Length: 341
Ligand code: NAD
Ligand code: WQD
Image (cartoon, rainbow, N blue to C red; front, side, top):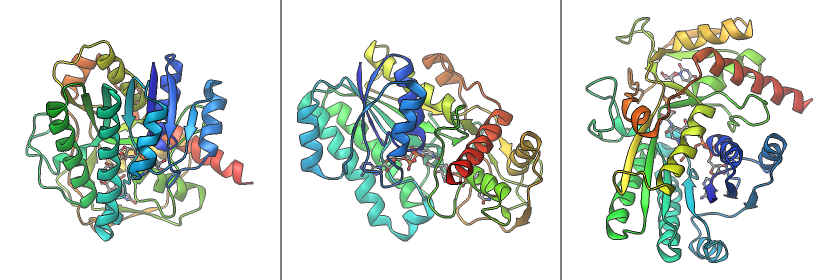
């Protein structure tokens, strides 16, 4: 099948392209490289031996997006990753986030409607749950008021898709709510490429270990958790990528049970920040320089996924344990350093 992957040069998108190609799908990537680089496309080819079609343009541009769909009207399905994702930046510049994340989705849905493209997989986030009242959090748990404009774009996007599948019955969708994706491809040819100072835990850990950063701040040690640090459900990016292929195949083979379905993608296990650090130290042999500091404003105390619905309905389960996640992230950081030499 011919699958459009928007944001396919990005972190999760690139891993998904590789998994799609492995399953024999033909991939078209659209990415404006606002948070990625063209080298990623070359590295995808090195891994899979297959070159995806790549078009560089901004999906918020309605005319360019419409023109793209005219030229590729035989696309069978779309996986829409393209979005901005930095929570803090979205607080500082909300209009930039609303424009990029919402306008691009609208242009995609219009393209689907006009060109009769039936299937959409959308990148949503566990951020839509805020701090859930009950853990593990289920897909049916209430959506809480968003903590950030970024989080709100995911809630609004899900609502836009829900309205669209009702109004345009030719469109079916699956929204995947990712928990905390970490790690990199085994080849260490693709991985996460944070611009500037990383916000997320794993890139900060690996950059500290390799000497780019002096010290990791562990935000909060007085949470109501086993060791006082916050708990998240970290999931290996390759496990996550594989779930996208299954979601596309589910729609193509008409196994969906509703015009729009929602699945949590996590491991179902919560880990504290210190547990992740311990894993990193164990697999890398590097003693990490870190200190416990104040809580980071806006952080939830703990969240992890109930994955039963995804496990049963998608027949998918995250396979990789934390040591594989931290080791692959470390190998990726080492490979990046090697390439810079
Ligand atoms: P990423 O920044 O690595 O990838 C996004 C890609 O989209 C980038 O290559 C960027 O250049 C491209 N892009 C952004 N805006 C675009 C536009 N207007 N037109 C064309 N291309 C555009 O991010 P990622 O971590 O791979 O995240 C992918 C998706 O998953 C995003 O929607 C993000 O919100 C969501 N998500 C990410 C996480 C996470 O922790 N990484 C967690 C939950 C959800
Ligand atoms: C994880 C834990 C931090 C950095 C974010 C988004 C969420 C989703 C995933 C997109 C927290 C702690 C972190 C550091 C630390 N993205 N930490 N020192 O905040 O769970 O989720 O990414 O949808 O929407 O909010 O991820 O990696 O930033 O933090 O102690 O330098 O690590 O406090 O407990 P988070 P994260």
